[in-house]
Image (cartoon, rainbow, N blue to C red):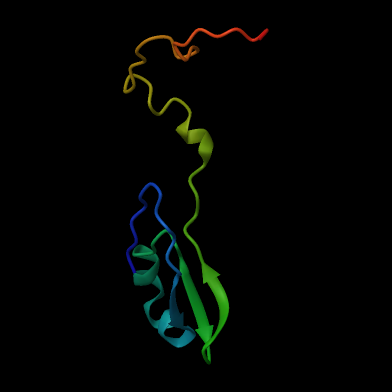
Length: 85
């Protein structure tokens, strides 16, 4: 059930589990919940989907401060061109 987030990864279909088994193992399943989530079924038909809660994007602001160095002019491509042509 563990899935890794990798750049360019094609998402795999979420794992499915019966409702009775989910009820028995709910806490353990939540601890191991992968990024693709979990589909809960009843009699083989999907009835619910459990997805991991996304982080608040505001917490990302400033998270790379003092960890990234900028080299050169990031506002330029380094190629001279004339927009009038």
